Structures are given as structure tokens and as C-alpha cells.
Length: 164
Image (cartoon, helix red, strand yellow):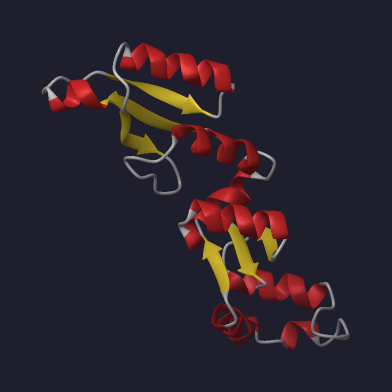
């Protein structure tokens, strides 16, 4: 997963001039330092004036910390990270959940009834004889799953439940 941030020279911005550059993260730390030096010149402060990311980024956040976080997030499946970003919205909480392994995930699903059906097939509701499987009301199970904290991203075709 990559994100883009627009790093602006804050001194020039305060003078009414737009001096900045789009940077794709993550990147090597020395390359990021050089990008910032190129934007700042002799000036000292930068701000993030725009971004393209599944999570919010503040104007005065440390771009090096964001870069480090992207290195961590790239250890995980992009769709899982994007879904957790949608659900939690906070980069720190996403990283905490990923590192703790406090989630259950189902891929390539259209709705929570698909999750309910897969759970039944996996035996998560106990042994259900195959002859009774067609009689289960997956819609009602899906409704219970939603109340139990399952998050569904239709766009990503993924369902996630945090266990904490």
C-alpha cells in the first residue's frame, strides 16, 4: 500500500507562495529527508497540505512517523488495512489491531450472509448436519453478526470483526 502526501514549505506558504511536492510513502528515510530538503531550501518548517490515503493525516503531523507507520502497514494485506482504516479511521488504532492480531476476517464476500454461511460450513456454530444447512436463516445470523461488531466493506468485499 502506498499513500501520497503534499509537503509544502510553510514559510513560503505564509508569504503567499505555493512551494511543495507530492511524495509517495513509504520511501527510504534518506530519500524522504532529501525530498523535504528540496521543498524547504533554507527554510525549516513544512506542513502537509493534502493527502491521498485511506486514513486521515493532520497538517502538522511528522511525515517521518507516517512513513514508519506505512512500513508497518505494508506487512499486512492491503484490503485488510484499507477495511480497518474505513472501520477505525485512526492509523494508530489500525496498527494496534493488526499487531495484536485482534481481528477475524473473511475475504471475497458480498454481505454478512456470506460470512454466516461460511461460518456454518466451518462448524463455528457447532455441528450442523449437511441436510439441515439449507434450512438455516443466514439473514438472521447476519443481522446478529452485525450487532456483534462485524464490519462489512462492500467495495473491498471483506468483512472484519475486531476481537478487543
